[in-house]
Length: 299
Ligand SMILES: [Zn+2]
Image: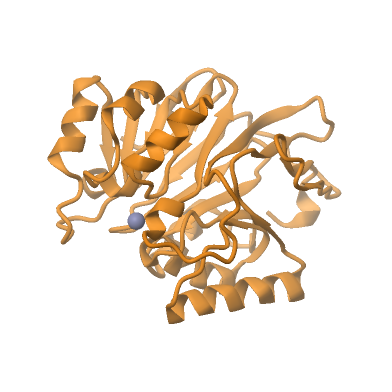
């Protein structure tokens, strides 16, 4: 949205650690549509999830492996809209990060949330360069994610609450670290809108799922974004049982070289009677929630 066309409070605050609080106010307002949209874009083998709140705050979690994200955003955003409120990079792997290099060149990004985990690739260097430029030239806020951080979608006064995102992983600040397995550093975020909830898991491993369970945080969600494109290194039965989703989205490329999604993961989801929504079979998956119930609008 153009900043002058909306009015809302957009804050990121750390409830557990009181890390940061910031509030952003713009001048005008658009009528809220009272629904929240979550688009799981079909970007081939990778993740790209575009969220629009009732107040038209726009959030992009990962951006897929390349420029296809620009076509997808163009379908969802008005042609004149060159601003995205928040981007979240779950971890710096190509299939989640490369699309952001295009997004950062084309759009003005207001807030950037990532782990600060380092990688030795030219693509990663470009990411770092582009986000610093976004900060210096456009005034973007850069935040480091860790469990306890909460992003609240407020309306024009604090009483209007349009939901929130809470960060459940990584459990500690990983800024400046290099990881043996960068998947394991993925941001896990739970989006709550009224009675509906969504769990976004990046590419975390079963061992990370166990750590999240051990934290005892509420992970119960209606929709689970299945970790790591349905790889068998993720989606442990115990985790699925606790999340207890009605629907599971697997963001995965057609005939990918990794054999994702793995049969074992599909069997676990089937065992619990969870609807499986695969981007390789269905294309984009759009979920619309009014805060009470949700529907999958394009299937
Ligand atoms: Zn991935």
